[in-house]
Amino acid sequence: MVSEPLAEAAGLQPGSTLLLASDADVTLGRARASRAFRVSGVANFIYDYAGQRSVAMPIDEVQALTRRPDQVSLYGVATHPGFNDDSVSAAIARTVPEVSTYSLRELLAETDRRLLYFRQMATILGSIALVVTALLVATIVTIGVRERWGRSPPCGRWVSPAGASWVGWWRRGSRSG
Image (cartoon, rainbow, N blue to C red; front, side):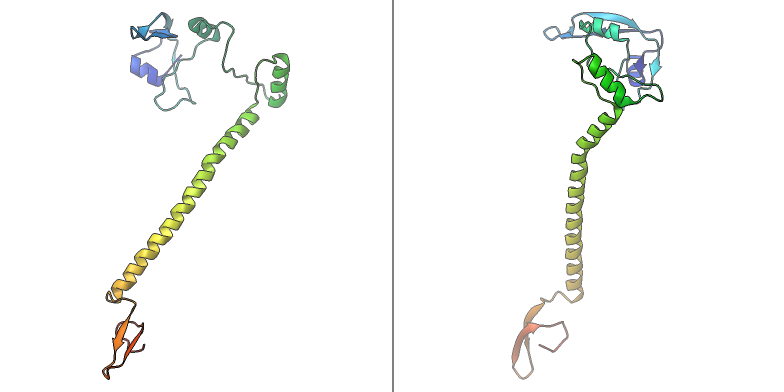
């Protein structure tokens, strides 16, 4: 089975031949050895990234292609309804102690724990954006108020007709000091 993006990019359809190689010769810039596989279908891999080119193959074919017999890096097991995932995971761990096992609940909890960092960063950055926005609005309001008052400084000297002067706060047009 090949993903839709791979099928489109390579012009594959069911029955086509796909050449796969496990390693490349960097000096020659080509695959060292490749094997031909027949495409049995085109599938939508729901957990792939947009545009990701993927291949699904039987485990024995992957092990033969990579020359790693009896090795896997990830293996998924689905249980029938009514079985407890945690107990199945524990049973597999007891049976095959050299592998690490996780139930779906444990994987989701670990994912939530790792995503907590991003949630905290989003909260911090959102708070900073809110403060910056408040300062920007305050600055714009201050400029607008000063424009309305005729660009006069808020503190200055007012001289009375009798020659007395006061220094203080006033609003333009006001005679109080």
